[in-house]
Length: 293
Image (cartoon, rainbow, N blue to C red; front, top):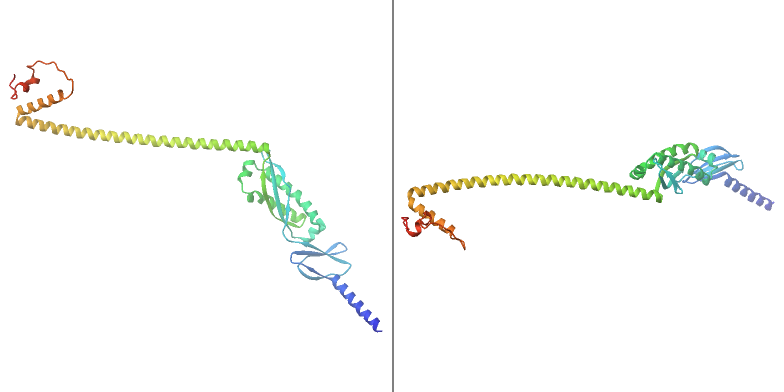
């Protein structure tokens, strides 16, 4: 009797343990779950915590709801002017609707990746196809990817129950044949800009030089006018002094002017003059009083 009772107790405990292990389940903080009965969803979006299910007839599928990364392979896209670019990108995505996600992928993450990747490729192909190469190079990548991110997020929420949080371009390269043409064009544009700047600089230099020459001419004219005015005033004053001296002693004034004439005439070497000895020029050489020989 004791052995049978012990066996019953052990069996009861084992059954209780089995029932508890198959009836209770825990959803982690990073997960969401759906409850199934024979493959049909009967409870959606089960939140983190301890939950109960009916053994055997009911099963639970848990899904990781953390932000996941899909690193795509580099792809070749054509721009608006039919030039090829090599784009390397990645996608940040997250499960937001566990029921739709389960129905679309059976809870298989690899299946979800295989469904997301072609949608991303198509969206990027359309985005790069509406822009020319200059716009792709000039635009910031955040702005470049905002449109595809919004479109993919709206599409895949409905189709797969996943949110596309971000589409990022890691690198944009040009094929070798396109790179050479682009670099040549960029070089030509820089040379054209350099010529324009040089032409503007030369124009500005000519303008400054013309202004400086004009001011120089004005200053020279003003200085010449001033010097002529001063010279005229000096000559007038000298003439007045000479006239006053002549009025005071005409003979002395004549003698003084003759001395200046002798000094200027005989001041140099090798001077020769042919004059009559009785000319007025030698008036004061023979007679200091100016009376003749």
